[in-house]
Each structure stands twice: as structure tokens, then as C-alpha cells.
Image (cartoon, rainbow, N blue to C red; front, side, top):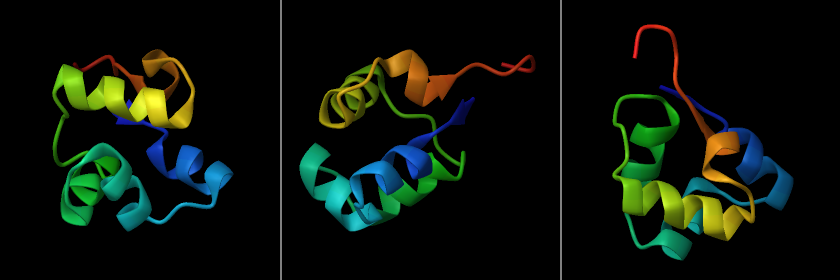
Length: 66
């Protein structure tokens, strides 16, 4: 699964730590999700969408191999 977390963070001028604080996870968790090493739970994906003010489908997209 690919994501646009880094782009969405840049739009808000947030660091990984800023996003982590807003959604209640560690900065390392945000890094793992952003780099594709970890796929977030539905709840966490929805929390991200909410803080970014965008639909979850904008942040996370399935790849052909998913």
C-alpha cells in the first residue's frame, strides 16, 4: 500500500513527531507507516484522515500487488 503522509504533513508544516502527537502514536510508528514498513489499522488510518482533513483514500492507495 502506498501513502501520501509525507506530502500531507508538508502541507501542514508538521514533523513526524507533530503528527504522532495528534494521533496518539510514537514518531517511530509514523515513520514506519510513512515508509511502508507497517500498514496502519483502520482506526489509525481514519485518525490520520481526520487530522489532515482529507478522505482516507487520498492518504492511502492500494497497489496492484496488494
